[in-house]
Length: 269
Length: 129
Image (cartoon, rainbow over all chains, first blue to last red; front, side, top):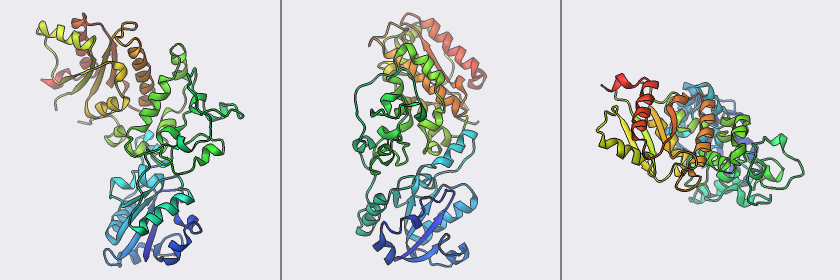
């Protein structure tokens, strides 16, 4: 089985090189044709490969430069299965926050249609295993319908808020749901699969696994839920003191936000 | 290109105000597209964002505070839209494109004035003709 791997605009944390131990049987079978981190090769070698000559191509990271675009199109042509790995490839990821400054990277899925999308920043080892096994058996898994809250160990109860908080402002010993503490925890609008790794470590969910199947506009939904929980008398004050709105709502998917996709100032005519 | 303003009008007040206004055969600017919604509280932010991508401006009109048919739908909507404005300003969006007004069902003429004012503020009046 021939595979190719390439890193586009990303920190490199979701490169398969970190997950070799998680799926040893998969990578033992694989013959690496092109992997810019493991083998010192240029794209020249890659261009000589006949079309559809590679079985699986892994692409990590977002698309920024014309070179990135060329690599993505090459991968689509040369590989029978293109696997997009990580939040950057799927929704633009953290680099996508550059769109606040009106220019940033695009997700890979805006150029080509990947056959399989492995979510996460970076994906958990167990997620790799599940997705790669699904790929080999011919039944690749899609996004889950259930949110991270299903796996979260924290206590849930009804709540009203008087203020929004950031994580460092919360009490370390509190065991309640982060939403009830006023922290924008993205768990409720994020698909499960990571085992609530961050929440078990005591940190609110950042939302790197992306929306559950069928959920759109997750940032707006989270905002709607949080604002609806505000006590009306204190709402104005809370909204005034709320810091980093774009980062807390669209941390990983600002590049796919409709307003960003449409061009910054709505219609430019 | 013709301007386009999308209006989300609460059916208990603003949509009736528009009906009242219609009896006077007013001159409304080109491209105003009203949508009747059940209550401003039922307006999803996702829909507002979608409307902002499609149109030049979005007008949300609901009942005055304390007069909501569902007791506090308009207050909730007001808060939510205020929060959305915070987000839009963080994204560098022009905040004038989203306008929220409160008016009761009898104030048809005021609705007409507000629509004209909205067009003037976005300087869309001359584009329509």
